[in-house]
Length: 188
Image 1 (tube, rainbow, N blue to C red):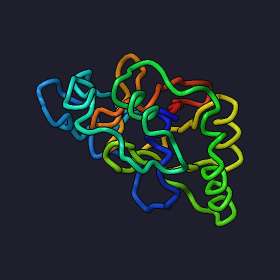
Image 2: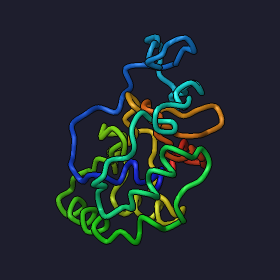
Image 3: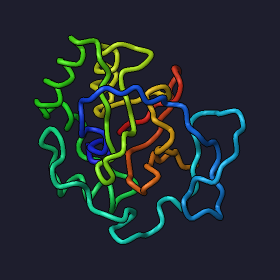
Image 4: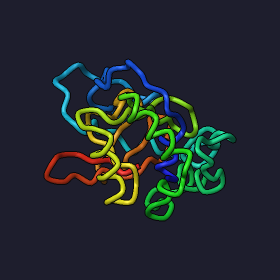
């Protein structure tokens, strides 16, 4: 969950739309959100400048102290802020019994779950959307990490870099986009 932990911080549902306000980043904007209102294509691509060195690795702050579901602070901070390529071990999220319990509650209530940026607390993903809980969990288990599809991404605060790295607009390393026959898939 390292970059996965970024998302595994809440089980709330949301009415927030997953449509980004923006489409393409420009290299000149310090806020990384100077964009045009063109037709949206996914994934929304960001520039490398999002991940430039900041006060705390690639982010301004460390991950929050009280990560949801008992995720390890040191592991999350290392992966989210001082790493661009790696993650916690495959299957880490499956050992988080509180996450599995919350997922089961949401499934029974027919609700989605929000997953937050571990640094900023902003919502980054809402799942499942366009599929059921069984499919979301089956795909996540098969790949070892929570796996999000385009409709589940809150694109206002998520970008994919040209190399496939999935990042938050705050500079949190989230994982990688590894498309398959069904489309884009972010392992986070």
